[in-house]
Length: 325
Ligand code: ADP
Image 1 (cartoon, protein in one colour):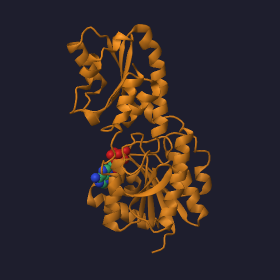
Image 2: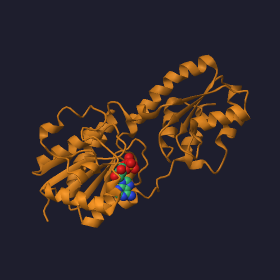
Image 3: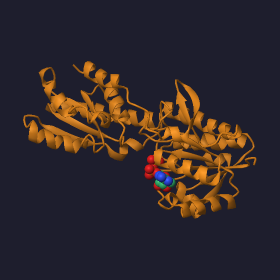
Image 4: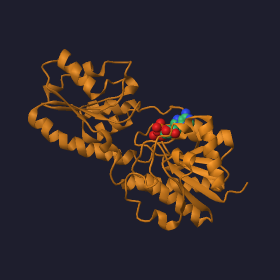
């Protein structure tokens, strides 16, 4: 069946650049003769039927805004077959033939299931600051979050060096250390403690044993928020008990990392990916995510994007150590 009307939604955690993606999908779709509907609050809007007509001016003046004009939510009903059936019925009632879903791994898991169950053409866009989706070098929002963390660490560095302290800075990343590792490199931190190598070495003991104090009087350690790392609080507790000679402090950046105007890198990525999502639907692609590999846009089966096959580059960890001697 030919696609006439495309629905767009943003789901799960918000990420800077989602608006740029919404704009690109909307305008590319209209340019190519499609009608567009904006679905509010992620899958919740499909389940409740909160669907709006989108014109070119619906997405005016949003490329520079963080967050998402479509709002986002977590929707428990959509994880049940009954909820998804309701969503399908509302989608059909609104005349929507295909969906573009912008979100992280939870949202794309839902998209994959929905596409299979109801034979709906769906294209996903990787919208998450965590960069934890497979088949793509980067995700929409990741670069902005890296910059936000880097700026925060630059400020902490002033007080860390004045007080000669050990600072643990906790960043997001669920089970992925991309944010922690790459913001550590960008901010010249002394170490990154990430979930991927939890079982291999005691990263804290290693850090202390290298005696960072020999050449430095302060240290900043980027810690990925994860039970596997113990988080910044867990590490500070350990320092208190096991290495009481150090004065450890904790900063948890939290949701600050999700906000802000997207960087040029994220706006360009979101614009290119948004346009590519519409082109993918025109080519008859379904159940794929748009990814970027070595600068080129690629189609990644959503299943593959969710496989957690993307691994952290261990050389990056070595680099943090080498550059902070
Ligand atoms: P993110 O997309 O940022 O990873 P979540 O993990 O919270 O965010 O997922 C967002 C939404 O996607 C959930 O609230 C739910 O509606 C939907 N979702 C997540 N996992 C599934 C699943 N296994 N089946 C169906 N829908 C899901």
